[in-house]
Image 1 (cartoon, rainbow, N blue to C red):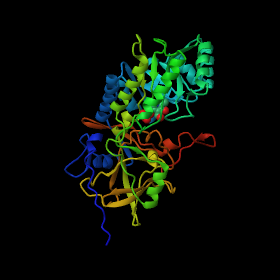
Image 2: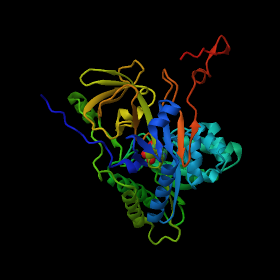
Image 3: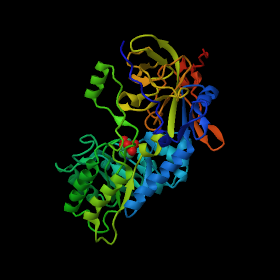
Image 4: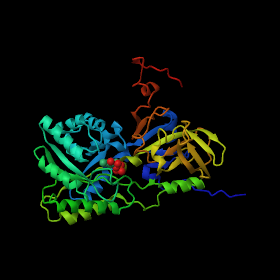
Length: 461
Ligand SMILES: Cc1ncc(COP(=O)(O)O)c(C=O)c1O
């Protein structure tokens, strides 16, 4: 008989998420039994930890603050745009990095003044530019010549000027799609356009953003070096000319791993679970901040007024501060067994298409992981998986699974494909509160019209 390889229950990393195992063998977050939370609030449900979120804000601010001469932090809204979480993040002195008219509107609604907002994105509507310029945003980072022309036009129409950052596109990191390339004259043309329109376009800085969950630490140094060398050659880096170096986000968390297409195919073929990141294999925040600081020193040493560094973390702040709870709704005794969950990647777990996330059996934390399960969603779509193979304890219907690191790109990517979107709860000392309600059927249909009268579909359980 084939011997099944036993895997001990995961306990080592639980502290990274503010979690522990209680006497009942259940997963706890900040002292809350997540199995009870699932029972009380239903599944699927997101649970965020206030303590974890504030710790992450403090860690990001202090690590970058200590390594860099002068540093300001702006949280990337698209990572997780739940207003209750944004308010907590802003209360820690962190600003808003927005990439759409909606996100810009939301930051202003949340009471942020323009100097605490940065507006990015490959296309910015004229209406949103009017709002951005009218609110005197800290930076509007231009992505293309069309973007610069639109900003200049709106400035002239409303009789105001704009604080401009030029998004540069280095050879390392995400390339080609975003910003101005330096090797082919695009960036130089952008600088010329800004100079020709200096009455309305005030060049304040440059912007880089190199990717997300960046695993190769050398990317940060090389890209920054290319950008600073270019700016020095053009004379734009001269002492006092540039106020801000906006270095974007992309700072990885230690418990998530990008899994490439080839590895995904091989694992699928062999029925093998994706491997977690090796401890220490991903750069930590201090590594990245040190690399940035060393690169910067080469260009700014001796300056009387070195530029302020801006960072735009998303994942580093929210990823590990939120857990997604899903329940096992049905089991099929196949090889491997299939567990049908109340959420999958068609609507809730989109990042599990390409990222490794730990999945824990929240009510069986002391049981050994014996079997590979195929975890699927319930939307009648073959690609509605969570994962092809995850090693877990023997499962039963009603078990609660916790998808860890659900705080980055889960809520923002989720859709109402066939099912309402889950609520977002906040675990705080003494209470679990609701930051976002579970979507209702009426909520899904709220924008729809039948025969020009408002649609009011019956609620079918
Ligand atoms: C311009 C910009 N800044 C910041 C971020 C945040 O990235 P991350 O969540 O990897 O830190 C993103 C996300 O891709 C982005 O596009």
